[in-house]
Image (cartoon, rainbow, N blue to C red; front, side):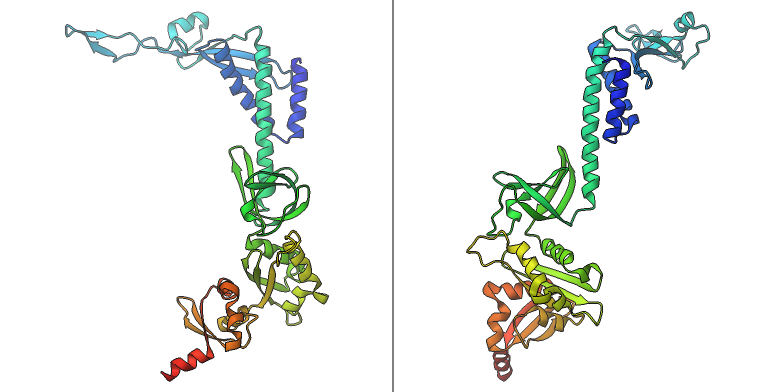
Length: 378
């Protein structure tokens, strides 16, 4: 490839990949300087000039003009005599003024004496180096472009194609790159099929040593949060706010919502006509579940500014719950229920009270009315 064809091809790549031409030429210049010194055993100062119009490459050797005498440099010899040391110069990088004047009568200290030292076969070295530099810059540009594209998608929901699987992860095709869905981050008891489309929640976007790293989850509480926000139009319009989500992935989630308009029923809007909206969300949560798996349930909880009311709502399906805030500073509360509501308030293996505690951010304890009466009679 001749010089002009090379420049034309380089310009095409720069435009196609949206890479700065200045960055590419600067990198090429530095790489060619290194290549020259390595391939031609050069110890002198050199620079490489690249003509961006013609593609012509020149290697220029230069020496810095230094003073002829270095005053004040003296040493004592073995006999104790003071000996003047001649000026020390680096002959590979510097030239004495008296020698420089023989080349250029107008030379002065600090000037550079230049000459072209481009080898005859330097074009071969330049072509190989240019290819490496351009390839590297393309990779860097694409890497940065992907990072920029996905940076604002962190903590968002995306749909991807299940492309690969290894012992620990699934790899989800998200378009220009693949995200990593650890098997520890899928919903318990669900089955992920190769080639299927799947919704994922982006938990982290970072610039790794080998390229962009995009971590995904289906187990994160944010997955449920984004499903609601993308399914319920009133949330998109700001008429319903999602206050918080507490999740035991694969088993149960509690979702606290409230309405910003008196005309809107927050719970009813989330359920939808004949349960259509909540059914759509449950399908996304349970659509890949094993046949015999019970599936994840959702409790819709009405948020209230009064912590007592909010906690009572959060302990649903238990009814007629009385709540006393025992320590506001420590966020501790006591829930009092009837005997027949105790098991509902606690839930299987304590799941209901545990999720209610996460949702309300209160440490909850629970007693029955019978227990309270017994304690009062003692």
